Length: 484
Ligand code: URP
Ligand code: ZN
Ligand code: ZN
Image (tube, rainbow, N blue to C red; front, side):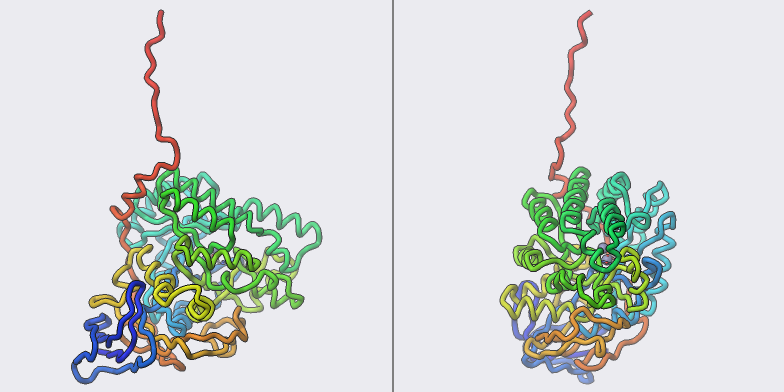
């Protein structure tokens, strides 16, 4: 199977140039102007369009059992929606139940993902601690291609880790050369505030945002950074949504610590007021953690992406439909946390970021694709247009526009956060494994052709981390024998 993408403007994180791209057997085999290629190749006309590495969404939850239900998108529907929006790879989260074997959970996610139409990889969450967990982290890192482990500092009584477990797991990550990743919210404080609000009779969705103020996120982010620094583990903070958390990440980076930060597309555009909507079901549809913030925080997160304090964008695609959200109709704390958006991330970033002049097209590629590939160690196989890289490509029309709606999106969700938004910038075609799977109006996906992408640990990449001294180096004082 071969494919020629003709007459496009190639945009990578580094360069912009005119070229055709020739793909064969799922790999980029030729790049150049007026390429001569073997006859019989499919042709995609990219005239007037940009040709970029396919988006990588490093934070999704397909088929996740969570808060009494299971997310509405599986490994076929979710990634298909991603392809329609130009995203060609996801990194999903294996989340074992406390006491469950990490390997057993990994096998379950792997089995679920057999239907994926595009490539995928897994972070694995550490939701409890024991010698077995320690051992299995090693097996996952050495034998199963897992180089990142997730830690939830929230969701008390379910998957939350205490500080002792966090420390032990971060230390293990450092030993293995793996990235520690963290959902940073102070779960104890949230639990306290939830109970206080409920006791006051605040049971509706507004209680969600009131129990998770920015300080709760800022404190946990700083704590995670301090713990990671103490054991010299590289740290990736998922869904950074507020000034406090961003400030902690930026300060740590300025101090030489290996800390990375992710912004979600929805935290860049959706306002805190959505948690106070009079229509309770609509407000519940917006419940996710961290919650939506005010403009002041959204502007700060844009600034974090511009300055490089935050490197990646994701969606945290965690789809729930109205009957699932209704599990919390009498108690906001029981509402399944999560929103969708895998199909819309690139359009949001283009419309609100590139079109407004906040970021350049090259920066767009960096924050939607290349940075995630580098941080999670799949570069240049992914996140790049280069001979030998995987032919995961989006042909991006920077001028075309669409109006977002749940009635036309490809996710199984009955709701879209961006409903009614008119967005400029869309995928004219998406190429996965060298095959056109989205033609701008229809999906042509094949169940199960997606491959698991193994991600080696960093070993020497993070040597510089070891040069960082977060805490005082141990120092022994030699004392003379006490005189008789
Ligand atoms: O509300 C969210 N973000 N749900 C998905 C699980 C998580 O916290 O990432
Ligand atoms: Zn989270
Ligand atoms: Zn998540």
